[in-house]
Length: 621
Image (cartoon, rainbow, N blue to C red; front, top):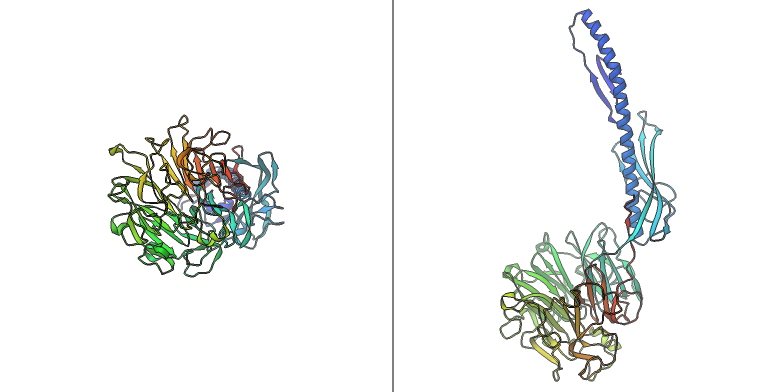
């Protein structure tokens, strides 16, 4: 196009570009000569420019269609990793169910679309086919370009087709919480749960009396977990809570005492957003501890608790108020007290909480709640409704730096009547017979890696070599130094209902050994036996042991792996290995809590194998 001496080149998608602007006032010969020369140059320039324009246009179309193809591959991966492995065709804008034809009535129907609707890109993925350990399918990425008369120019459709391959890879669990009849784990930023679900605690949108043995993802919906990445999960007694990377908290399940933090007492079967107080906004959630009808969170060094205040569980100096939203704990711990909190622990069956708060670089232990068996370690059996230090002068923890705290309870009160646990005892079992264990480090004192326990010792769960007389309790901390643990460095500790374990890292060629003590009715000592005698002086029951016994690794997947961490559920112990595998032992008959897809109790470490397969994009793509 020529307009008033200006030459405008049509550069396709780049629009009109000014290429030449001659000056005025030249003599005629000069103008003629110059015009001829310029025409030659211009014609050459036009040819070159047209060639460049075509090349740029082609490169753009190819690049955009490839981007659409990659988007299709990523969406297919997300669907398959959710367990959805079949669809007719999967288009941009579809759910994982797919559709017969590509939608066009919304911006979400396209991978990319400009404001004028001149450029649109889409993808189409064929039905996946499982081939060995891989899913294979074809992907077509397309770019559509409008012509300038407003019609659709079919010659401006550019397509890029490739074969997609998603190969099975190892599942990596980033966080896991073992409750009483339920377990939840976070994999790839998504929380999956399995076990019992009468109160909707699995968060899968149902209330069910049946048991779910296969991990199911919590419902992710608008206003809930949709678009979020999960970082922490904690399972309480028939409820569970999840913290996301944007520091919101979502809870599901039972809500009789306001433990879901949603300002009412209505149970939920999908994760529902906790209503945070203003003082909690902007703070980083670093820990969650869900217990029996109450829960606490750590937010940038402060503790917040909500739910039942029975026995003082909320640490708010009351035993009668049910708090329906998080409340700041202001007594003894937290930033205002110059004791920033780094960790809070409880158990789905416990009636008490314990926290590690820092005094400079030293970790101190504070506990609150029920104390009938000395669970708080404060040299009394009086309940406390505010945090009280357990590392006082008269305890084995005095002067120690506490780096790990583990809390256990007894069978939940509302379950004791059905005889869940234990099945037979020489005397009536106290449903609140909890205990606490801690790991201390104090290199300056030459006491690095010690284990200390206190509370109920009815079944030898404090590891002292004998069981105290009725009422079977030790109300201050005492070091676990009984053979074969005497003098050994402890790297980690775990507790469950009436049993405890210690990790000794230097043994077995550096792979580490685990020693457990206490009740073994369901195999929680890991000795490859359930109710038979497992030590020379078992105590009142032949399936208990008050001295540490070595967990059996031979013949299990744990035998050749290095143990880096141990943790407890309400009735089982678990170990995590250096290759991120999880092995558990103990009760599995109340919801398949161990995660091996069965309801069989396990007396040796058993791999959590029920997690769904994870598929990654093949490097050949």
